[in-house]
Length: 206
Image (cartoon, rainbow, N blue to C red; front, side, top):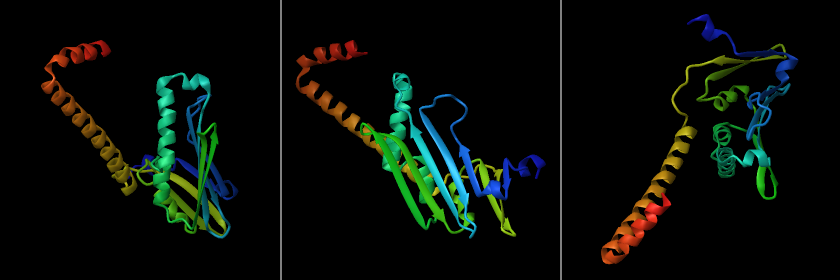
């Protein structure tokens, strides 16, 4: 194995490893969806994980249709428990979990999910399917936390479940569209005099 694959991306020891805050937002001044991951190691060996997602409601961002759709999609996934972090938390063997959601004018602006794990090795499930693998070691009450690059494995069960849910929704929508199209052509067969008006309306809407 080459040295580049064994060199850690992140390594923290002692007090620095006691509280780790990783921003997943990038360096842009303003982003529609901002995520952060916080990991706290307890003296007794347990670990608390917190993930926070912020959804911007700034008018200048919402005026962009693509950005607005990105925000709305993130909100729908979080509320349905289908966002990436909810699915990863579902794979954790947590002793206790909390979920906090903040809204403004009935729209989701912030979601914070926490989980308390008795075994730090359970953190592997949090990073399953990603490009990094965590390593946690404790010696003489000194904790070391490191992230190593890893070859991306196959999809996790949570990711496969999400794919099944989204595929089922797409197939259902396609089935509804095909049924509506079949009904339309059935109506036109029974009322051929309406075909010209339907055709004109369709051409005008393109």
